[in-house]
Structure formats: C-alpha cells, structure tokens
Figure 1 (cartoon, helix red, strand yellow):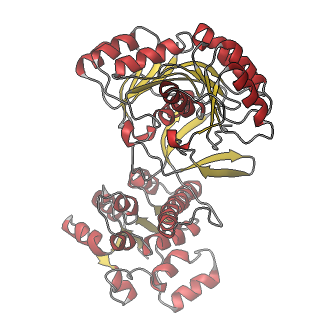
Figure 2 (cartoon, helix red, strand yellow):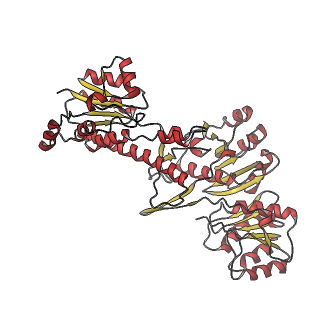
Figure 3 (cartoon, helix red, strand yellow):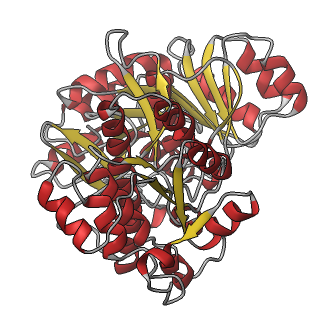
Length: 510
C-alpha cells in the first residue's frame, strides 16, 4: 500500500517543495482548502480530504478533518493486530505523515483594530487535533508542525532505519507547539473574562536566544519573550551596536526600564546589580544624565544607562566619557550614534520607552511553583501626602520628596534613598535593617545630605533612622507610615525641624 501524507498548513512556506519531495518518495498526498489549491497549482497530485471522508467541508471550513477516516488513520497502531483489523473493517487507510501548522491566532490578536469575532475564527480546532493524534502515535507517524523541519524529514525518509528517536523529537515539538498555542488562547480569554488569578495559571514564552551563560559562567541560560507584544519591552528592542546581551545585562536593563517608566520629564537612570546607582531628571536629557552621573560617579562605571528621550550629541559626549555596558533610548541622533559606536564594547539599544508595557503580572519562581502579582505601579501625588510634623515641607522639598519616592520603590528592601534638586544623592539597598540602609545612603551622599530629602520604602519601627538623617542634615522625609511607633519618629522630626509626610503606600521589593 502506498504511504500517505496529510498536508494542511496556514504558513505555506516551503510546503510545495516538501510535498514534491514526498511524492518523489512514493507518498500519496491528502490536503484541504487553500493548501490543496497551492499544491495543485505547483503540480502536486493532491487528493481532497473529502474524497477520503466521503463528507464535505462544512460550517465555513470549521469541520473538514474531524472524522474517523482521518483520526483512525493517524491513531491506529500498526503493530496492534486488533487495530489493524478494525481499520480494515472500516476501510481506514493509515496516514504515515502529517504536516500541519495552525491558524495565525497570535498574529490575529496583535492586528490593529481586530474584532473579537475575527479572533475567535482564528482558533484552530482541526489542526491541533491532527497534530496531537499524530504525535501520540509517533511510533508510526511522522508529525511536522514547523516548516523548518521539512528538510530533515525528507532526509530521514531517504534511509531505511526506523527513526523512532527522531519521530519522538518531532512529537515532543508538536506538544510544545500545541501547548503554546492553547496557552495564548487561554490568556486571551482570561483577559476577556477579567479573571485575575484563575484556578490554573498557564503561561508560555518563545525563545529569543541562547545566552553564553547565566549569572555566572557555570550556569546555562536562555532568553524567552512573551509571544504577544502589545507595547515596548526589552524583547522588542532594536540593537544598533555591540555584542549580544548577557543574562545580567538583560536583568539590569529591564530594571532600568522599569524605573524610567515612572518619570515623564527628561530622565536618565543608571543601574548596577538591579539597583539604581543614579537617577536624574532635567529640562534636557543632557542635564538629566549629568545629574545621574554626579549622583554616583563611582558605581556608574560598567553600568547600564536608560534614557527616555533621544540621545543627542551633547548627551553622547557625556556617555562616551565613561565605560558603560549598555545605553538604551528611544533613538540616537546620527552624530550621537557615530560618536558612541566608536566604542567597540558598548551595546546600544533603541526602544520606544514611552510606550512601555505596564499591564502585566510579575512572575517569580520558587521551588515547586511560582508566585505572581501585579506590578507595583501605585502612583502617589502631592495631594496624597499627609503632613504629620509641625513643619510643612516647602514646595521644592515636595518635588524632591515625590522624586525620591518614585526612586525608592525600585531599590531592593530595606531601602533608603536621599535626593536633592532632581537627583539621587545616596542609595542604601538590600539591608537586613533600615538603619543599615540609611547609613549606607547617608555615607554615600556625604555633604550632599545637607538639605536633602529622605525616602523610605517602609515605615520606621524605630526612630534611629530619623536620628541619623537629622544629624546628616536631611530636611524632609517621606515614608508610608503605619508603625505603632510612628510618633517616636515624628517627635524626632519635630525636635530637629524636619518635615515628614506619609503616603499610606509601602514599596517593599525583594
């Protein structure tokens, strides 16, 4: 009996050549819809599926391959005598190869102005069913979901060996493919039904690249992206210059982008080891970056810088004067790009930063599971602040307090940030107690602590941090409030003439 291949594809890349290769190897070709028209136009003697099923395509093409004559031919075990007998009884011919790829659901969801009905019609039913049937019976059936596998399948058919391991690899790829497809559909319906934390949580990602290594050279790593990208993310950045990003580069750059999202005015952020070492805003990007650099000219060395305005020549001159791993910005003016690309090792990324994605969950892996939560995008304005001290903060101090409040939420807890004149001047990150973080930030600020404001990601359980701030010359403090001992810290502020405001919002970051 002639071997049979069933081909029904949405992505028709290389399919005619593949079908011709199968015909040359003695396969009879079955096909459907637009695929069979293309094959016949290409000279392939394809047989319509309805000639096998004795049933027409119907319901606008929703039903064409969902039939025992198809799935029996895919699922019947060739080595099982009872299966063979039943197939003969019902005149079911085996199907030895399936090449199917699915309706373009992902591409449809991402289309501008697409309607719900069009999205629904691009949910494939028959395709995944055929793929899963063939993959389940991989011991007897070649199953191909990826056009890039056509050449290797044709090469395998040139030999007489069994190819069990190869067919199993193809089957594994199919089950990943259909799971990925279903996960995208599930995510779409979850959005439609506004379910925040459903009873099962399925996510899927597509590989961007293998990385040279992870956090350390002995750790393997890869970079994956969400399949549907509706806004700017690091996965969509255009790399203009420099070698490929490393695992740590990606982590740090993403942290810089998250920080930058909070600032509407011209801003620059420098990040080292997932923490900001400098944040500055200004009337121009050059002014903003100057403040970022001056915030900590030591730690910025070898860091990542993100800017929310196009990089001009003046800013590029500042950037090129120090060693940086990465600069990411919405764009680079021609003369700025020419100057920066003179540095061989710097990576330059172009990304529409002002169109960053914010409507996503944060997923963190733990042994045996994951944690998921909303991103920390809670905004605090001047109207939200409660003054709890005798002294009211001045208008300029309120501006610095809000600036510092945006900064501190991006610093690992326990976190303290000192700021003055639209610039961070001291950052204390990731300490086991709050006074330790304060001492680091104050020490880094040095003389700049005088007249600065202090921001704390959580309340003060003890007044020791406020005492340290007062001795350093801090003039105003912003913190969530809510400690049973709030009054102790307020009393210290009143003693030293420090203004304190509370936000009723906490910014722990672990």
